[in-house]
Length: 261
Image 1 (cartoon, helix red, strand yellow):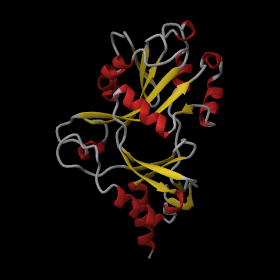
Image 2 (cartoon, rainbow, N blue to C red):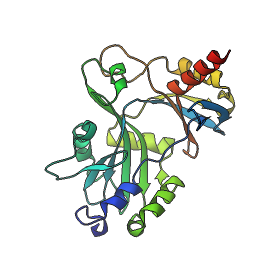
Image 3 (cartoon, rainbow, N blue to C red):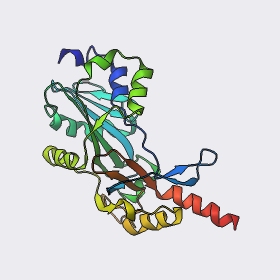
Image 4 (spheres, rainbow, N blue to C red):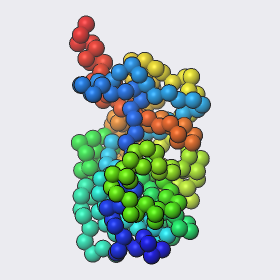
């Protein structure tokens, strides 16, 4: 696909087109102090709960011609065939072999973007919760497909950002995501439960209890005793609604409430 030849294409456009969008917190964050507000994301129908792993966000962009790019959340770090890649956070070392296996996985003129959490090693301060010997792991948490990216390559950066932040990217729904992961031989972030929307807690204290009940410890420890997890991600089957709930946000908010008494 000549229009996406990584040697000639505007990589800034590819980078912006394939960045992972921010997802909201289940309870809204107060911009004044980072505490949680009573307002929460509305779900309808069943919500799938997955573990939110405390690592670093990474992506593999698979092109139809067999080329691929590896990136962090903010920048592209490596293209297939590079002699030297950006070593930032060890992402390229962790994912290069995976990316090599995926060449040819994109179909027709589509671009497939796989979003993975790379964790353990020395990724974050939370790595100790997953490994005692600095092992590194990765789990797939989302897949997006760009059906016809060529016309967007000439867009201004601001237009691409607005398109992305406005939900322009097409993400796979739950069933297709799991099926794609199985077909590619990739482990996903753990599926913990499916909960009816009416059974989701709305109060901040009850949501913290909900987190503890569903995820007392991480389920993806690489070695040694399992430590704490970062929290949960909640999503509808079609991924039209998605939100994250992090232990630290609820603990911070509840401590402040207790301190005011």
